[in-house]
Image (tube, rainbow, N blue to C red; front, side, top):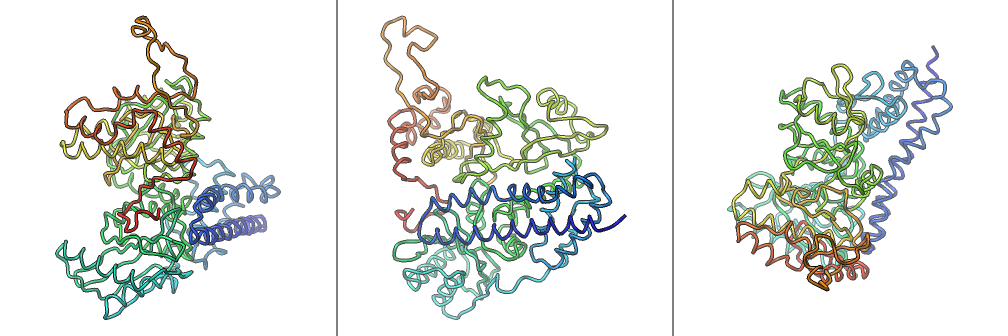
Length: 571
């Protein structure tokens, strides 16, 4: 058999990846220009364009391969040769791991692979040891005897350079904040060096210099939030703890724009700042979400090898459109669209669209990120019998038993959270009050970004492992501006008062906030109820929602930043 078809396939896939990645970098650099001039709508548009980019180039590459795949679509020998030739083409690339994932995407679409195909896919870390040395220039090490000079040097490391309003003033403020933080935590403020990542990490309304401080007592993160102004860039905060860094890199926020040559170097650096995050989470945070999906699968396979517990249904009240299972020892849950819905208005197409829009959107720290998978295969023996029976009963169109395997043709993988209704029963009063107040804040923050959560029941909100309230049920979300918020009309007679049906006309878009109180205000204990009403009683008035709609139309955004801003008015 001639090796020429395999070589041709490898060249075409490599050309497709090259074109994709060039456009990925172009969008990132263009977004930086709009960030610097505070044109947030353009940054958001480019975020959406970048999310859609991968699939567009996969489809384009598959089209370029069609003359060959018509003949060799099922010839594993040809594709094995293509795999070998492609490995040679990408061996010297510093972004080779991302290039591997692109090849895998092509083979999976071509063969409709169930599970993995070890013959023609890149698995584990096939080339990862070939490029252990960091790319020069991506990380800058700065030292100085004078602390003000040291922090001033940190502010000058980003490329393209930031145009500062007053860098010396900001450097003095950073030094003072670091000294204050060290005094509060009983640490020495002495710094031996600071290592700085060269690219700026940014998304609409947020930018960060990301660095690592080396001192006498070890290392700690340094994240410097920055905001552009008409007079130049200003430092808007200072973060020195792992917990603070985790809030910035939360999966509930939009992926960062980061202009990076070798993503593995950036991920390795970030891992030293936030060791609790997985490699997949870090790649996804810097917008390499397709490679992040590859890593999620690797991490899942590795976890299954190292564990022996069984898949079970996720705790909490069962969803009306999704069925959810998990592994108790695993950090994520698996969500499958049910065959039949207990909501008459729900459709499969509508659910897919909602999840896609949340994935493409900014998420503003209040929407859970989900990664979509097709044709995952699990060992049947790992399923609790009751779990498998329920999955087959509720989602039999997506869950198939094939011999000793369970094949799931479509699912979402999402961070495991504690449903709010369960969380409130598990924690003390102080934590419960904080959670219920944050729950109301989450509803309001979403509204400020033109998102109406729809079904506000506690079971649809979860508490992340970092303690943040997040909406994870998307089947009823809609644009805030599509809603017509109304007060309940006064009854016209005693018959109206006694009627168990609405005595007033209700259109599809009508929403009556006063109806929510029995469902979302805690009844007991009184302290929990009082705390919620003290902070969020306005949620039950149409006036609050109409005012939020006016603000959305006017472009006023209520931004829940993941740090305490130095200049709150800038956002």
